[in-house]
Length: 511
Ligand SMILES: C[S@@+](CC[C@H](N)C(=O)[O-])C[C@H]1O[C@@H](n2cnc3c(N)ncnc32)[C@H](O)[C@@H]1O
Image (cartoon, rainbow, N blue to C red):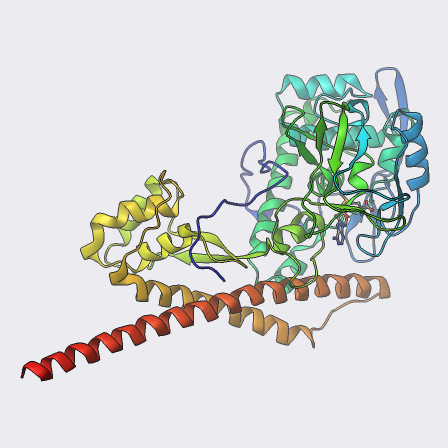
């Protein structure tokens, strides 16, 4: 493992998701995870321009308490996939070298039907089959209202999906929506209790809680500012928290950014049937020569082999957060674990240090990614700041700026006088984190799954296995960092010992 390297922050295919405005209620006050504010609704008519569409009860409750929408299908079946393929071909998708099939990795995926060469362009999904914030609404009035309120792309697309799904056969996306998973696998669908119980050791739990809070905040905001003013266009039995959880789950697991299509975020039917592999290095984008969304293979495939793309250089935790899976241990070169560092409140310079951190947009605590390949300079700079004595106050500014990644010249800051203390400080954080993971992993074997039905038991076993896989992979990175840190500290200390011996030898010589 290399040591401090400059971080190039998280690479992501997707822009960071931001709510319309921060939710003003604390997380626990909102109706997650039991969705208690949800009532059962019954058949209603929704009026929308020319079409008047019958709406069934929009959600169904499963035995484990989570809600599922009546749209889409079970991801572990090929239900509706054939209809999707047929509709895509009729709608202008050119003939493909791949087909949707059941696969070992990712349940459904695209499988090569013919030999595919390395460097070959595949897919060619035309813009008319791509869903973006500019797509036409089957209910134009609803789209116009959202645009009048300048709703950003993410919430706009989430509302668009619900609007089109609710119109069923009257929507041109009916076949696409029917083939979407009814319950996308993502941490959005874990209850608060499941997150607390299974992901207690991992920082990804905080990210999931934050994400769920954002989705709830966004929905509440839309409801208060827009939906409540236009109930004929956005009836609550259709536009509710359950349907928003579904649509955001779909966006988090399927939306892509297309840099060459003006950086638009898009749902690309057909292309979104491809699963991720950490080994491949090829992304979807718009191709100006063929006028379609394509990707270029970075390897060859034989008939019958599943074809993969990359969802971005994401850690296992990030893949679990958005896509609901954890790659096999040791297979993800972009894997990382978040390490949380904090100023010590009893530090004489606490206020001074906090002030410089704030000046650079940081606070008293910060999380940094510890990667398989090393830890970032920012983490090291924050740790230097935490341990530095008052005599180094002149350097606080430089440390905070580096921790915030605001130093233009990426020079490797080093303070040899506090190097040992700094490495010891990081080592202690790694060790306390390792012990949390070990405690969870030891307890997981005998963990009471506390369920009342076989279906619920399957879900809990599945979630627990995902959590165990994540914790093993994160602990593995911490173990590696621990070894590197111990070795460095041993070298520093033995170097100091040698220097001490050398100086006392010299003293004896001159006595
Ligand atoms: C863009 S969709 C890919 C198509 C998806 N398999 C389907 O049937 O709809 C992303 C979802 O596929 C699954 N997936 C993708 N790559 C995977 C992988 N390497 N291992 C397990 N599941 C994967 C996850 O459920 C993820 O949320």
